[in-house]
Length: 337
Image (cartoon, rainbow, N blue to C red; front, side):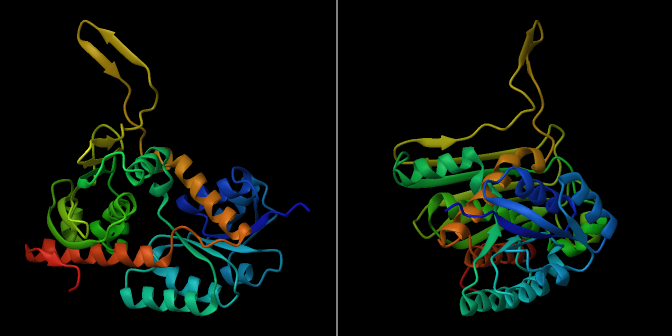
């Protein structure tokens, strides 16, 4: 007997909501979108028309109450995640949520406790795990290709900084941007971070100073398996979106190349010239977002545990908060603090 598609209610029609709705409506096997909700109703209606989704609403509670919705995709602003997720949990249907669950650990713990109590599948959106290059590196590391892990190096640099209005509600550099890199360290090594040290400053734009934040950081992490990890972050490059990972071990190393707009190289008497990197994360991680949604749909339809949980979100948040303490106080911070 053919299993019918998992019908989604997508909550949020902004940039990330558009990415997920587009994938679920047309690019993910076994999924479809029944309704899109956004407080900006015209935005929800425009996205619904574009994707052929039958209806759009302004109030997400209408989606939670809908009988033709099997699962929810929470793509609303971070500040709303806690209430939206807690409300959705009362319905008892599977939930996919963009990161982070919340910026407050107590609220994250409340969400995770309620997920466990109700037995509702909740998957968190760390899409970089599903980037084909990063996923292959992780698979090869687990297969023992590099031997014992000794050093992990991540470079993560945005092509453009966020708007100033976003910074105060973002949680800051470490909770908004670095948190993806922290999850990647845990993902590729299978180890936990035990202590951190961060130096952070403002070199890109004084708007970060006005918000009490940073735009540039270099980070060192000690891991439970004895390895070390380094991360460098910047909020702005002049050459496109810069995303690199290397895992170095006793038998060798694995690393990825950046993703360019194309693979054409021009050579002349001045040298060799290649195109710039893709502009930002929607392009760089387009396939990762699709594969992430596919993994959620496949797990729910098969009755398997979801692959990225609220625990993963909690661990990354703890590390990010420790990094902020380290940068403010200029000292190493033990995660047990």
